[in-house]
Length: 422
Image (cartoon, rainbow, N blue to C red):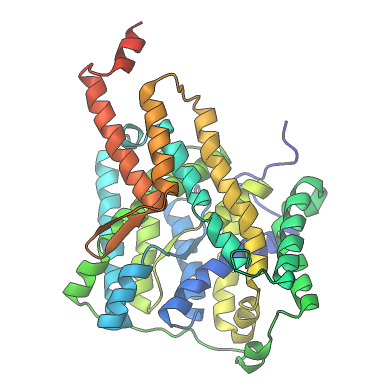
């Protein structure tokens, strides 16, 4: 029996509820999303603008059937960093455009030939742990944001972290009525107030920021060598996208790979990345933080996601507002992420349970075991300037193993086939 009402994907949300729910989603993605432009050394306003535009584009292309918020992609950090250092940011933008264009081509191929192959290369015994790793491999990031991995833990950071996490955890199970659907927003506010009380919020940048400011648009430069350095990232973001769509589908109770279809969601994701490169922003991707928000609140309405996207666009033009939001301290982001990342990990385990994966079969046991160890061990495989590690490497390994097992099974060579015969 459900603890409280589920607001499904296509449902309308009253304006009085839409605003706080949209703010909640924007806060959930803000900390991680603005980190990428900070690393690249660009103003985050253009990123907020494109996150909103990209999200609205994604919603339109998926016919409003796939609730997803697009934020800055971390997959591009390493290769784009190399290009920026060697050639400049404009050349990196050209690489972003190239990756987005290739992703759109892949989406068209999937539209032509279908996505049934996914169930062959990523059966439930493989997909479950891959999805779980999306959240589990980010657990150290949440702890680091909170300041819990420092040699000496600052009591102020610990206090803010505990207030934020405690409000999110207990709020999700104790709040009733209207409050029960905005526990993340309430936790952010509580954590921010605790940070103010502890004196770890600095308003200097807010005071110096202009009230209105245009996002810093810039044009790409198409350098073939720079594009070749960044292009292999397509393997990473495609694997990540499939995992996000599967876990979102499990949360909302629908097969998003079939309806609206993987080709539509991939097209929306990659077209947004291509447009980002054309106007000077960073690549976008579906965001795990927002998937976690949906898992906690059981509010899946695309209208809420669209509302958050519009707010992000508005913030990109209001310098003081975007700067104020960026003052949310790490312990607050860490406290929220602690719960949200765990929810994503649990969703992966839910795939194994809902699919009733039988570990009496050797192939299932081997698949899940190897994928988990590959993803959590910290090992990395480097191909050129692209490094695969964590969930992405585990996904590739899982796909290769699953395909081999499928071929062996078709040839009646596995002992699992004998068990099926019995």
